[in-house]
Length: 456
Ligand SMILES: Nc1nc2c(ncn2[C@@H]2O[C@H](COP(=O)(O)OP(=O)(O)O)[C@@H](O)[C@H]2O)c(=O)[nH]1
Ligand SMILES: [Mg+2]
Image (cartoon, rainbow, N blue to C red):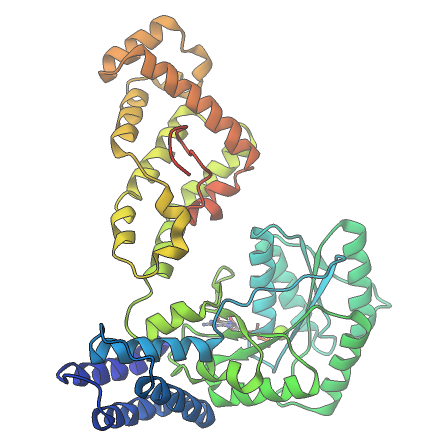
């Protein structure tokens, strides 16, 4: 997110200036705090939020919590980091779901903030995370708006409730969509509501009615990060008049200064749940306060980077694999490709060791990728003929001996590989391809994948 670059630069300059100092004194702390305050205000952070932040940082820096083992810079970085995380909401705020499905989510906000796009993104995100969403647009005043959601639904391949000719009002449409969800076993109804250029009473009355009748578990306010403190103000007003349960901050890929992201939580008391980082439908990320704080302080967001890099490992291939799995067409050749991808991930192990927050990646650390073993397996598959790779059932005893010779391994190893392949094939089918797509991307490898002896 380029939006924090400026703030990040400025804060790092503050830390650099402190580096020359032997210890924290009221004087050098005063200077540092003044500079931090300026940097935050220039980033368009709400002035009350800045005031509170500075007070907290000062109290901590001057208080008993100062650790002798840290240098002045490290101390200040640590404190600023902790306080930023607090302002951003401390921990990831997950979506809530109704005890009895379907859960109704109202998507609300001003016109152009990104509601319709976010509804689509959220539908895709939910469907990739084990849910079965149903979309409905109740923006009855602008037929184009409903058409827009219809087009999006088709593009992301998620169902949309279109409504009948009689269902002309938002309430009728939304209620019918909920009934439809019950009937078709959909567990989340995403209601894309009408927006206005400004908050007006008519809109609020309509939304209040929807809230009363539908009893939504989430009322997500969609705000455009580019509008800075205006976004914060309207979030606050929506919350006062309607009661929101979370915020989706869109257009974080733009060059806004970041003030909205840093203020909205403190001002409204409601958490940022997702950020929109692009126009595509997968450009939606759960909001992680600690990662954003790290990013602002210039620690880089190694976590997101890795997640992204691994998610993008040959997406095309992953999709193709998924198709093959569904059609039970996963050959030894595909198995070899898969292993090559795993091998590509190898260096991540060493990357992890350098990272400050490995705790979060415990699952990852436990997966040891044995490159040697993978190389062996790849060599064995390399020694097969194309028809053997396409159909492992034809690999009889004499073929096994030939393959072992060709790859410089033993028949035993070839046998073991074929067994593992058969197991992997079975297991992957149970995962119904999910692991190879998003989940594989996030490297949530099941224990022992792809070898039995891996610790997990
Ligand atoms: N760059 C960027 N554009 C976005 C994002 N979210 C929405 N948009 C764009 O913002 C514009 C308005 O979005 P729309 O969903 O129609 O807003 P609505 O009026 O609130 O429903 C569209 O051109 C979207 O493509 C985002 O996260 N990043
Ligand atoms: Mg819209």
